[in-house]
Length: 466
Image (cartoon, rainbow, N blue to C red; front, side, top):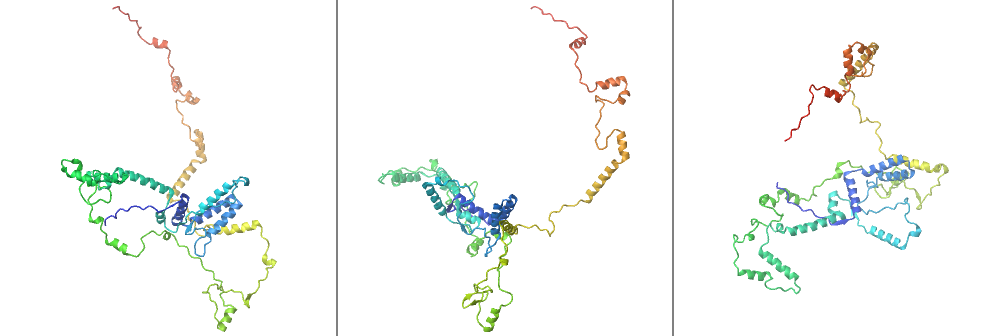
């Protein structure tokens, strides 16, 4: 199958602010490529809050964790943003005020109003699409400015190498004259030109002169062979072969794909993870029939079923359309008053349920491999040799030889300046003198001894007069 024809990348039509574009891009990447990232961040934040022992941070992190981990009726997490959102800067109530009341002027209020209006005028961004579709539809201000600079550079380069875009041919004298005439018509004030400036006048002027042959006018010869119009850019016949039928022929598979009503092939990132089970609907219908259901069945009257909206199976009986008034709770039903510490402890206990729990019942996945038989045999041999070396009779023998058990003996050399008296008495006087001189720095003799060592007397040379 021949390679597909080259496609030009289309520029995204909508330009967004840099912060809006980055936030939307981060949300799409976290949703498609990192599932559960929002829940993991909330859990990590709550753990860090517990380590800091900051009650305010613990309370806020616990509420955020509960909000993120609690699914909605549609199965989605409450912490996940919807299809379209407008990023806004959140006002932090705990921040220190930057301006006093006396410093707030009329100009400050106007500036704040303009900022609020500009914030409200930000366009909504559709993030219910894939990463490639989002980048094809939206772009940032930095990318758009770079594309503008790139277009200007390409225009200057195209004007400099214009012959590449005209079939790799230089313009002839006739084409140059026609372009010059059109330029003069545009530059003239009244729109009239002389016959010599128009292309028709130029052609009449040159009609009387015989056109030179290609062998005479070498500059008028074409730069390449005459062929079909080149629509794919400059190509020379040395590096690129001529176009063939395969470059423009449509195959059967391409025709079948174009005629099919199936959507184009794409990667489904949701198929790379397990689908979350939808929440089960809580039915408050009692398992046994109530007295009202039995009476309605005996009287053969229609009764609201669970398929109708608003039916729960536990309606309060009414008399002439009025329901009974609920009795006020007794002090025993109200219970004791809860302090702030107890309320915080209850909230913390509820938030701890959403943290990941270690699997204590199952086997530990981390296991240290035991010793092999070869290693056990090695340790046995080492222990046996060490036990034999540390026997009492062996230690006494080492001490008698002058070796301290457990320490490496220091080597002794005969060239050492200090020798034992026993070794010194066993040597002859000549050997003791030689041993005393070994290891010492040799001393240099005086000049008198050096002169006396000569066996001849030096005589001064006489200079003869010339």
